[in-house]
Image (cartoon, rainbow, N blue to C red; front, side, top):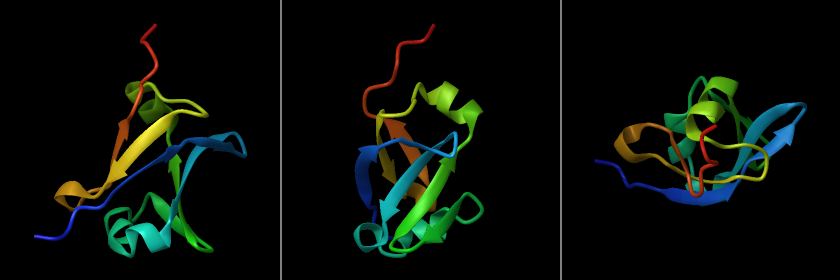
Length: 86
């Protein structure tokens, strides 16, 4: 069983897409391993683009604070304070 790493940070809008930037030094390579296919290394960060369907499901938008972790050897995103459903 691997160690679970958890971080919190804001969702940014880059080029019209909701994006997370995860510092590689904080998550080491654990986040890279569990985000294959959804993330890409960009300098000292792992860049994750959040699809519209997922942001709607989670109730997140630009400026939302989310928590990410690698529990179960998967990349997990959890809203810290989700938007109310409309």
